[in-house]
Structures are given as structure tokens and as C-alpha cells.
Image (cartoon, rainbow, N blue to C red; front, side, top):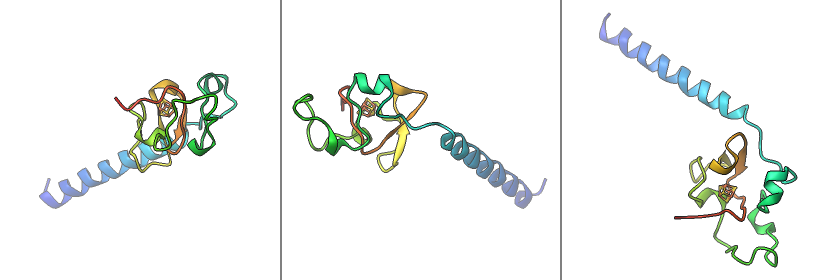
Length: 101
Ligand code: SF4
């Protein structure tokens, strides 16, 4: 196989894999705030709406995007969370299990 054809095939496989991963992520449902597991930890899609009286440990700069359990990139609008591994959480969300250790 000539180098140009090999490079094209490697590029094509890489692009196919990237598209497959993007589609797989798009198929993962978002965690609903009304999901019993979300309610149990006070999850909110928008951290600004956290009940600060109920969750005094919440600090304004805390969001899912900078939580150690977040599986997405810090710039992702939605990403996985090891706490809710079958659903995506909002990057600007928050829950009482937040940690940055
Ligand atoms: S554990 Fe972290 S990433 Fe998961 S929902 Fe709570 S704050 Fe967001």
C-alpha cells in the first residue's frame, strides 16, 4: 500500500471513530432534575439555582465542569459523571456530591 493511501485509510478510520463516539454520546440521555437519584443529591442543571439554605457547602464557583467526577471536558455543555454513569449532567450544573479533590 502506498503511503498516501495508507494515510487516507488511517484518517478515515480516525474520523469514523470520532463520528461514532459523537453519535454514541448524543444518544446518552441527560439527567433530569426530577430523577430520584438527582433529587437525592440536590442536582440542578444550573448551579446558580442551587438551594443555598439547604446546601450551605455550595460555593459560587462550583460546577459540574470543574468537579472531579465530571467525565467531560471543562468546556463541554454536557458530560458524564461517575455518580450517574448512564446519563449526562450539565457542565454548569451542581449536586451535593461535588468534589474537586
Ligand atoms: S458529582 Fe460532580 S459532576 Fe456529578 S452531578 Fe455532582 S457536581 Fe456534577
